[in-house]
Image (cartoon, rainbow, N blue to C red; front, side, top):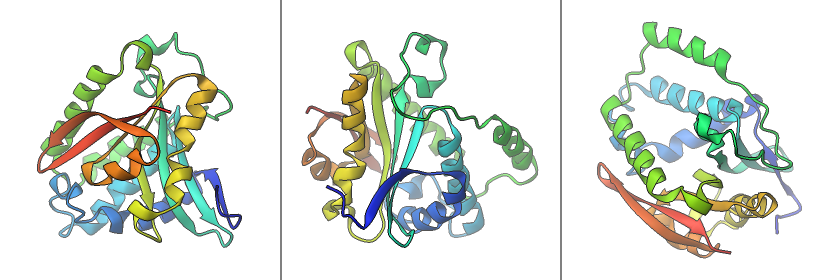
Length: 229
């Protein structure tokens, strides 16, 4: 149960700057993202710009729901990103998938995509390793093909989870942010998956998730987990 001084809501564009300011310190030199952003210290503004664009796009992109836990003073205490697959892929083979129930998915990021393409021509991001990012996308894509078929083809999926005031492993907000997916999955009668670092496996297991796949990219290993409730 959520503390009465806290509330859960979907993020909007007005939250992007605050989200970025909270996330960047958590991902900088965390032992995972260093592989993808080897030049983050040399180009800190590019590093922040990458994350700002990332969360802006997630907030605008159809079939994604970026959830925030906010305190009574408006401070963001935690964040989780949930996507409805295979709609999030934007593929034609998802036309037969029913719409999720009770979730606002009528969004569009096309305008920003054109602005980004122009910006990247004149100001390419210098903090990333494009090869490593492509490797990660292929790794996750291959995992998706292994897992997301049959009855699990339609599902809610969480690739991002952060809390900002306490350690993630012990934070009670996890049950709220990571519990949203299973609850919505019951409404839609679909499966629930998460992708996380192996170090957070016990946290997810305590919430009813079971490891179903493991992938390696660079120096890190991640696990896909399915909610078995």
